[in-house]
Length: 332
Ligand SMILES: Cc1cc2nc3c(=O)[nH]c(=O)nc-3n(C[C@H](O)[C@H](O)[C@H](O)COP(=O)(O)O)c2cc1C
Image (tube, rainbow, N blue to C red; front, side, top):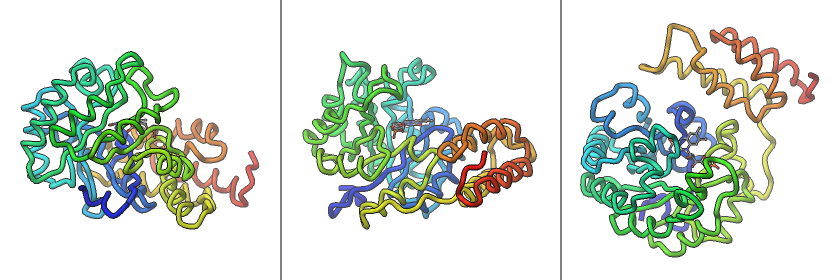
């Protein structure tokens, strides 16, 4: 069994999120208590073509372990080649296969959630990767199915398990649902019960109460947290604190949050290969806006952030907003 599930541990995973869970964001989540993390997905073929931007995307630090790298694609051989290359070069703790992405550009390659329509091929891809990297655990991430008429999670779960995957994450929505609607936790519970490998439940986990519910009502071995961490990486700290002490800690102050955002921006700007254009931070606006989502007056901040070009602009917005909330009161 993968070590992070042993001895009754119930790991909190940070979900892979494209254009969000970069190496710096991941570090914030790690510092706040994320137990296991997965890089955002990268196209297997592009890794073997040595695209430097993608290799930057899958970079991680030793401190971030246990770390998985997630790949997508549809050809078993090129997926296996990419896995081999990743294992040789980065020695990740596991390689995760994306069988859940609903984006058109991924579906039209027959990859991501498109694979749920072809379980036999999904099995071939899984088996090819498992055989290609005998020293590296392989895991998979799926949705419950393509749509409500084709809920294949159970069948696909058995396939990936029999092909040698060592854990399965289930995002409890169909491809057709995208990111809205209820997550199908009864189905996640059913698959977790049916499989021998650990199942990680995913979909709308937003609090310690959600985690407690999953622990009590399913045989999931862990949970994965996505959007709730996006604007609030402190969620891992909050959940762990609650599980240990029965109370939710005070939320970080506005000043602390802006400190984190500025730190994040500066650190990203130091990274190589990113979309840097000298000191222009416009390309980072969506990332920064994402991090302000849970702050008071976030709509107003979004307007101001839509204008920032340089770090000095961001510092100014941060100072103004912090001053408004210096005493914890929203003054408008
Ligand atoms: C912006 C964004 C990017 C995502 N990128 C990926 C990805 O690269 N790989 C993946 O398996 N899932 C990806 N997902 C899905 C999440 O990992 C997760 O399964 C989903 O958001 C449901 O969890 P949540 O309800 O906690 O957000 C992405 C989700 C979002 C919102």
